[in-house]
Length: 345
Image (cartoon, rainbow, N blue to C red; front, top):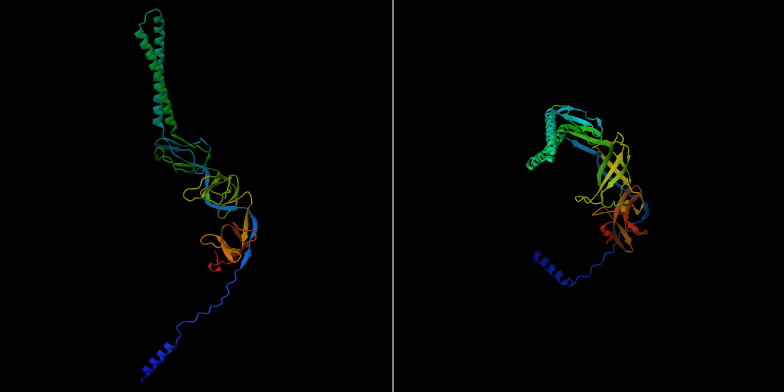
């Protein structure tokens, strides 16, 4: 018998000797990993919100002439402070003044015609008493007086319009402030309504920003701090809280204002704003190792033999832990370094 045949027979015998049912596997005894916990600490927290935005003038206006023309003279320089109503620039108004003079002459002519008509009516009135004036003559005379008065009113209205046209050749500042932008020299042609100057009221600066919806405690009059790169914090106050969320971001529009700003604050610069609440709110302090950031902030609380997930709102991070607002019991034990293997529900 060949070697191959012997091996074949041995294999067949081994298969026949094998039991028909496999014995049940022995369960491996694995000790569950110990779950480390730490107690939460009930604290009182003064809420604070951090905002970012751009410093802007409390009021600003772009100015242009109401009529087209050539700038004849600049009356202020860039960077100059102006009072409300101060002339800033003047257009060539020679044609407008000529039109105003023409309108004045038209008023004088209309008044002279009215005076002549009134004198004629006075003479006719004496003759009418003696029966020397027909009804048609009297009617024509009184109609002439009415037309003369209408002519005077029309001429005076045209004169007012012509004088306003002359005034429109002088550009005045509607606010007190600083001329931040304007042309270098006179002589340029400008169109009606074209912005030429920028006047900014820098007596106060403001930051328009948005706060998260959770900052419902924000209110007008609250203290704030404005910080610019390389500068010291400047005291400010919340000047406005819009009672409607921004439709695009679902955030609260907030305006923070600082009066008499120091030289370190300049309009159109980037600023960071810190607003602190007026009263404390109840919160909890938990170890940083207990806070999970994904998919949203939460902690895992050990409840008997189970672990439950509790959403939290992170208020502040510090060296001694994280201050959160959440539905936690005062004696709650939070899991440190929680994992999905910890049996969280």
